[in-house]
Each structure stands twice: as C-alpha cells, then as structure tokens.
Amino acid sequence: MPRESVAAGQIHVNVVGAAASVFGRRSYAVEARPGMTLRDLFCELSRDAGPGFKAKVYDPGKGTLNEHLAVFVNAREARTLRGPDTALAPGDVVTIMPPMAGGRAD
Image (cartoon, rainbow, N blue to C red; front, side, top):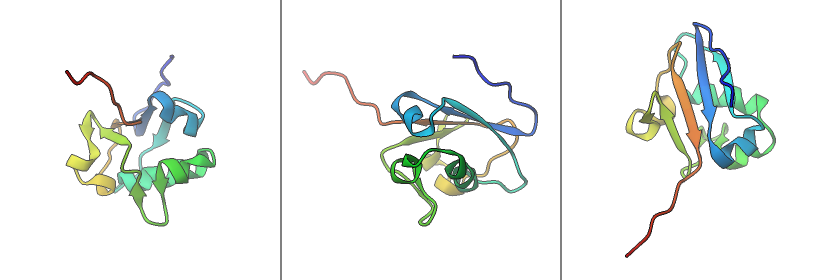
C-alpha cells in the first residue's frame, strides 16, 4: 500500500484491517491545528468518512470512541494517554485498528 506523503503541519492517520471498510481508504493526512486533540481529529474525520463511521468508530454527540477499537497515537494506545482529549501535534501518526483476537488456549 503506498503511503501518502505527509507534509510538515499534518497528522497522518492509518486505518488498519477491517476498520478501513468504514473509512473507504487506509490513510488520511489531516492539517494539524493549534490545540488539536484526538476528539477534534475524529470530529473532522466523521465529516469525511462513510455513514458507518459514527456507529462503528466515533459518536461526535457523545465525544466517545468505540470501546472495541484500538487507537494509537505515535504507537501509544490512546486510552493510556488522555483518550479523546489526547493532544496532537504536526507529524503525529494516529493508527486506528479493529480489535484483534487469536491465539490458542492450551
């Protein structure tokens, strides 16, 4: 998959696996704004994404992410940071992925 070029001043969003079906693509480059948070980013993405976005990913009315999604900011799980209130800066990489399961119980 070719990666979009991310200019200085942008936040790169990677969408992994089945989560990409909600977005209709696997990456976005979003212009960073002063004071921008993960919540702000998801509000912006909700305007561009398909109709399943609110139901499956983010509810802008409540300001909450789907609890079953894994969202990472620069490879750190967002829930271990400040969740939707995590501050974002130019050059940050946000990764959205569906829950992963697997392995074997022996």
